Image 1 (cartoon, rainbow, N blue to C red):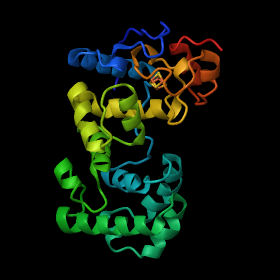
Image 2: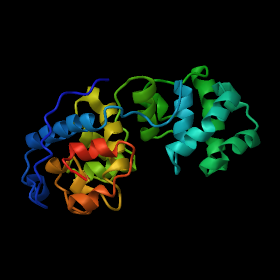
Image 3: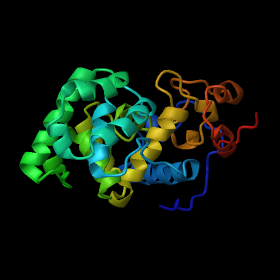
Image 4: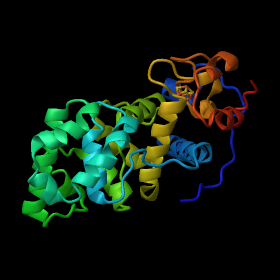
Amino acid sequence: MSAPSVTLTSRARPRVGAHPAASGRETDLARKRRARRINRTLAVGYPDARCDLDFSSPLELLVATVLSAQTTDVRVNQVTPDLFAAFPTAADYAHADPEKIEEIIRPTGFFRAKTRSLIGLGQALVDEYDGDVPDTLEDLVKLPGVGRKTANVVLGDAFDVPGITVDTHLGRLARRMGMTTNEDPVKVERDLAELIERREWTMFSHRMIWHGRRVCHSRKPACGACFLAADCPSFGAAGPTEPASAAHLITSDDREHLLDLAGVDV
Ligand code: SF4
């Protein structure tokens, strides 16, 4: 998907607390425009944003997403090549020897519970869907161990059906950026769906998650080196505003590109 064109406004350094959204002075229309502008700016920042889990079929993505609970995508990607080779179909999970799955997925943590989920998932897919992964939110969330987040990941990345994936990063960033005040992921999803164009839902989710991993960290966001600072009502609320010290908080491979977008010269 190509990145939409955008004019970056980020080089103007904002003042802490000065954004209209920080004091509730932003209209609904202004919020929608700002949210869409943020999405376009994120597309420039993260032109390669995608799902970080490795997969080549809806079943593989579903399995990888179940494994990703309470661990990193990197760790999941380390075990899935062996898992996918040993269990290529839903029926293979349905009839699996639990110990064989446990042995492979052990590094992802909670491996006994995850093994039970995978076997239950395989059985449900075989019983209800002839071993195929369904392609609607309604059917996906009926599968054991599959919540809205997992369902939206599968819809968006395996079936190309727009979905908003409210994980811990997206929820945090949406609140910081004044796109929602809700904590409940279902309500956050509903609020974001009102703001962002439907066709952009999947990519918007990936971009926000990438920004959360690289710049807008949970404990100490790199506000002073953030290319979204001019559009963010939380600029400086939790992280340093001084560019040089904020820049130290960004360590990803694309650091130079991100700092350049933010107008930070270090
Ligand atoms: S890093 Fe700071 S300025 Fe950037 S999005 Fe997060 S809270 Fe807002």
